[in-house]
Image 1 (cartoon, rainbow, N blue to C red):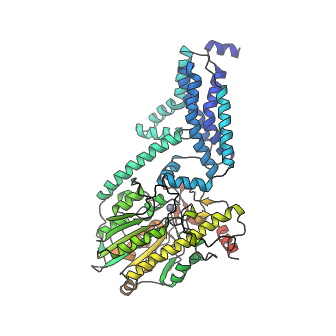
Image 2: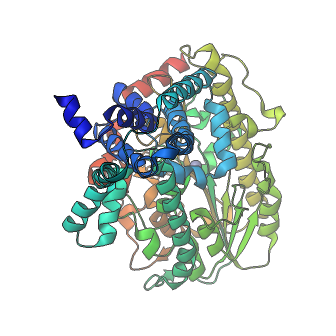
Image 3: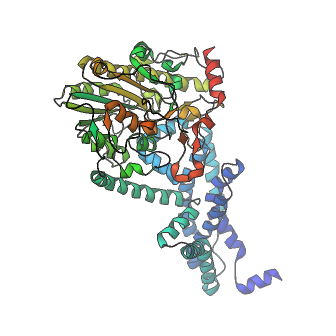
Length: 577
Ligand SMILES: [Zn+2]
């Protein structure tokens, strides 16, 4: 009975079934893994299912070309699914457009470094199996036994159920078409290849925004009633921004391996703050807050208020930005936006191939040169590559000091030791660079101070499980957030300022409030300044240090103290033994 009625309708259910299965397979495979591992909810799975119906439309309209059409669409979906699958293999998470954004942000060369860091041979087998299954499914695809009206009617049904219905219903629900489109995009995204297409489109949009931001930054109203207690006294202030350095791996902060011998020697001249965390574990996202008035509660303030560079310009400083990060492509990313706000830039990382070795020691010569420049008031930002992966590219051979298990936690697996050691060697070299910057600055004996902090931390098998490598906001661990934060002041500065070496350096602080500390240290005051957010102020007020993606809704923000696991402390204690 059933069969006959289908025949009457002229619907080729079996043919449609195989075709659908073929198209769905590419979204289904990664989504299935996500389901099985409990990484994410069921919505993505359902959306991917619905979206796969869209590909039936062209084969319904042109049945004679079924195999060719399926082949071409299949090839595109296959490529997209390799990305989703690869990302899942490496991070154990669902691919999303923010991943693309971060991939492009750290640019492609750096991304390939990530790949080499995480790649494992079993992944090739996974890709091969995935490809073979796709091919076998394609072999089952055949032209549909339906043409004319039934086929067209079915095409309309598929079009409506995949994109038509959500588009119509969202347009009715939302006030504007643009808002409806955003909702529809969110539904479409779990399906291959839309996360790539939409992700790239959104990335381009961001890029345009940033280009606009430079123009807009110039239009941001200046700080109100800005005054300097410094008067016209010549001053040089230096901000050193590190990269991916977890303070728990610095002997300055109690790590058992002697990874910061130079800073250890300087300890008595440094204000070393030992409870500072970053709001976000990614360079751009962190610096958007660190270098501006933005924070987790007000993430967009970086667009509406002056950055630290504009602030210092307004205070009459000539501003310099020396960077060993990859900005030379002049893509107008967030970093470039910040650096372009300075009066002068030195871009050191000119390598087209980032896999070439690049050492932060390169910043020392231009730093010394800028110190000699003839400007009474100077503000110098030095942006290091720090201990960014791949760690072994961050230090010259003579800094390869840690080569065995001595001083490393006993639980490290044999295959983790080399990476673990290369990170410590990178920290050791970073110690040389930061202390050399201080040394260079001290030699010039200018009036002023130098502040060093890292943009975020890095988990190199530090946290509980011992398996985490890198950073992941979705699965935060303390080492991704705990950063070094210290200040060195010149003797001249100390003479003229209340340089409080007894300041409470154990205050819990988020680097998202840095601009207030900086203004306080520099003797600047203005209406937007909030002394309770300055770590060196007598009016300092302790606040919860929020971390997480502020754009993913209020619920995604959590207090850092909630993830500060006892386990990390325990690990450190074990390592010290
Ligand atoms: Zn970073």
